[in-house]
Image (tube, rainbow, N blue to C red; front, side, top):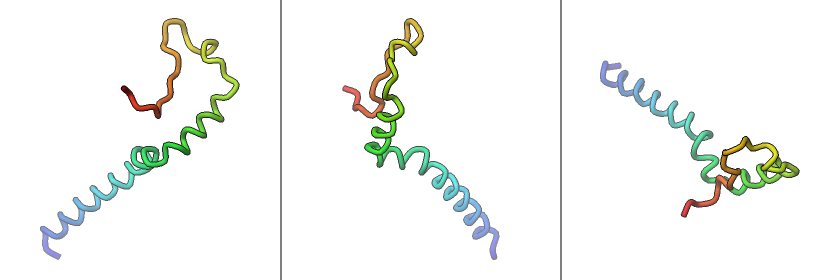
Length: 68
């Protein structure tokens, strides 16, 4: 195997590894936002936001709502 092919395979493997690592972190939540909305609805039920937020900190907002 020539030196250039070896370097190309190593670089390609690195790029593939980074892409595989980013999929569950960024792309899966982006494409499955409805699933995450339902999970957060269940997790946050029964919590009074005003009781758990420190003084002077903004109350929770919907992280999936588009900013206007």
